[in-house]
Length: 300
Image (cartoon, rainbow, N blue to C red; front, top):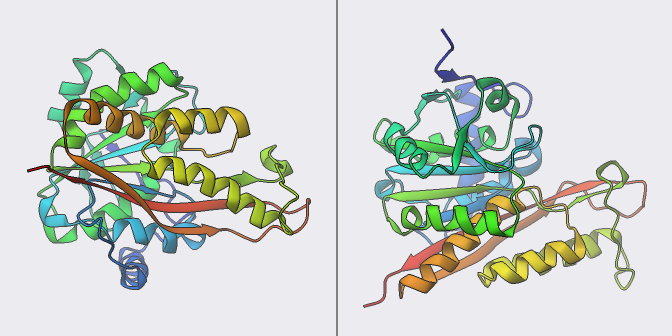
């Protein structure tokens, strides 16, 4: 019989497999992050690289979560290894972490399956992918005071076109509007260098890393403006290697759907930006990280 538990396959390499050490590390980063006016966040965007690179940046997004309000955590991560034309749900019922296990919400999964939009990924595909797993320890840490009182809804997002992002955004919009839910959008930003086959350089900037940041911030400004169409055009024009572009696109299309139906004020704000290294030579490479929070304020 196939296992119904997903192992923390990247623990011990991408982050600590010691629960005590991991908890202290996450607490340290969270303690240094600021609380913004977007707390409590209804959605966050945060990176999924190894914690020594992106853990401190991710803390700024996770700091905006109020665990007393959250009953379900949707985690939308891009598929790095398996080709997926749509979105897929996990076959596991429990996601293990070095802190404590997280239960997958079978009721929400059943609802999503009735749409006919979702396939089920194999456990091998699930365990090979890091984009969802890298958020599980942070989710477990910030929700620790409500351990056992919340569930997770992992969703692997494939290579969607704009129509696909609209379709899935519409499907998720009602869940985004529900204050019991939190959405975690998993994405790193620019992957720059020959090994990533992306070497865009605007030479009006003295250094390459400044050009990378300017390109990232152009995309971040469109996301913060909730401009789904503008973000899609930006990606088509510049081909910026934002690996979570499709999960971000789904979030922006969900916001677009809500704005058409509901008078709520929806705001997205970027809280932190970082790079794995500052590229100054064409032989160098780097990955960028950004954290953001989305809040929804109901109109009177």
